[in-house]
Image 1 (cartoon, one colour):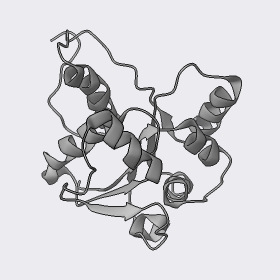
Image 2 (cartoon, rainbow, N blue to C red; image 1 turned 180 degrees about the vertical axis):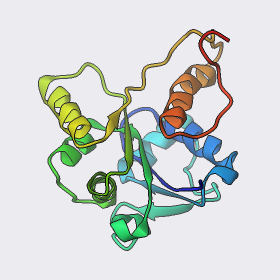
Image 3 (tube, rainbow, N blue to C red; image 1 turned 120 degrees about the horizontal axis):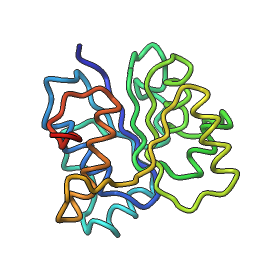
Image 4 (cartoon, rainbow, N blue to C red; image 1 turned 45 degrees about the vertical axis):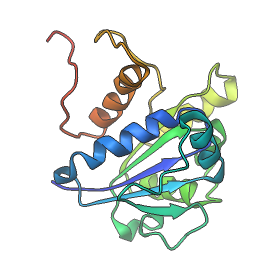
Length: 186
């Protein structure tokens, strides 16, 4: 079954995760019908700082600004079934937990949750304070998945990209994509 996916990129550190998720999804177009990206202003700056690239405009995806409430995933009738927020800042997580839809990212997350669809938030900030933990609990109880950007080392990664892939592959697994990746016990 093909799906409609939205990838949201916030200003938290971890642009490599967003880049890998988008690139991996683009490598499996047979598993989705529509792929859209929404990016915050801060995320654009962090992307430049961390990756040394000018931005994400070169990807063959529809890119929405955080103020574009005409985006199809801003409404449940758009029938987007999966939203990946990568990386997910604690501010964004807090607004989602509080039901505050003040931009397209938080509105889309609200829609995904109210429609009982899949929301995966890849949080990267550490350490957590009690407010962060309570917000993670609230989003989890509402049906979202909190996936900390915590790499694994079972596969013995050698590069930064391989380390990051242990997180992005896990994210794509959580979203039920059929991917080739290291599997425990193989």
